Image (tube, rainbow, N blue to C red; front, side, top):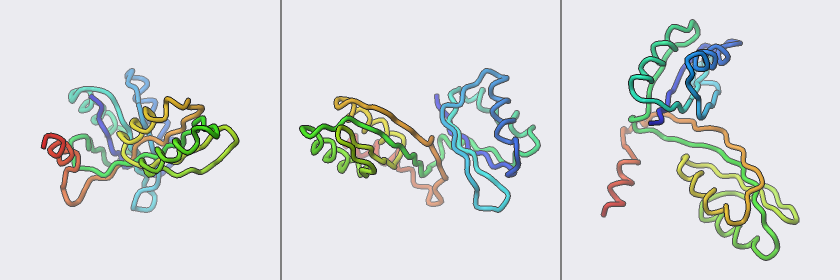
Length: 172
């Protein structure tokens, strides 16, 4: 299972290096990593997606807390969250299929950010599932390049679990 960890750290040089070294020493992979300033000055939020069972994540959490600059670690996998990711995707788009690519981009609320003679570059923002879906749809045109930021997430103050609501709607 993939777990999403939200880690607050002191904003100092070498913190990310120590965290990634901790994972490497124990043979754990980080599938997605996003770092940026948090709401409080001098603090950064690291959002990472890590594969592993509950026992592995508990062990990693304990190890993270042993690092000097780590302030708070939360496994937000099962917590209602707002999740987003940014992706740039360069797709083949000739004069014969360009309008179809643009139409599909509009369906996914993607923006065309660059136009070339034989390609389009799209900017896609949304939850990670949306990224997978648009890549699958655009695959038939031929994908030239993809760059993704990694997932960022904040817990929902409302406590509303939109993923649960989506699954209930799908059953109806």
